[in-house]
Length: 247
Image (cartoon, rainbow, N blue to C red):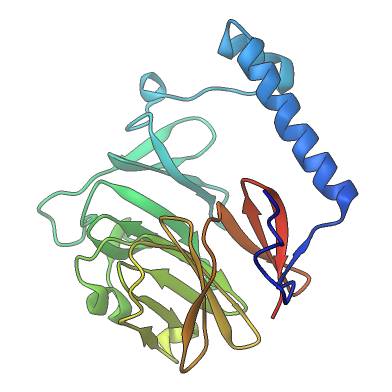
């Protein structure tokens, strides 16, 4: 399949061949090793030194959805059934309950440490922040605005926080100012939001990437596994390799 044949404007530029070769070679060598190994655990032992933590070690659930480290050095682990704080020795678990200051849902979708060092928790039923003084969960004006909507993504970039919802996303700055809501963009389950030169690039759950400015939105790619910004370049990971999206 010729990825570039569909675009006369050459909107997508391939990453340097050496970098692409290294990435693909690593992926294939890793995959081949995994397939050929009879014992998955022994296979990982050959690749790296690691310690496995599971339910038997105090983790609330084995299916991990997100992980971050806070300024105090705690590691926070989100799962499909509970939030966990790890101090290097043991886990402390947090669940949703009837308390108004608990998690709104035990299904943790994503975690973020914002520029103020506050842990933001995206759940299946809204967004909350962790108050380390009371070890409880609070809601700010953005959380109240979101209500019980599922948080499909939460990320930060240059002082802004982007929250991906179902069919819209929210952008806000420090102290919850400059609150912008982008609605009716017909994108379900927004997984990534990044911004370059006042233009938003949005990836949904299906892997489609859309470009949105203040007045228009258009699809620029049909299938992507992830998007990031490196040196003011928007780089997307696809099944055909790594590509740079150009204006």
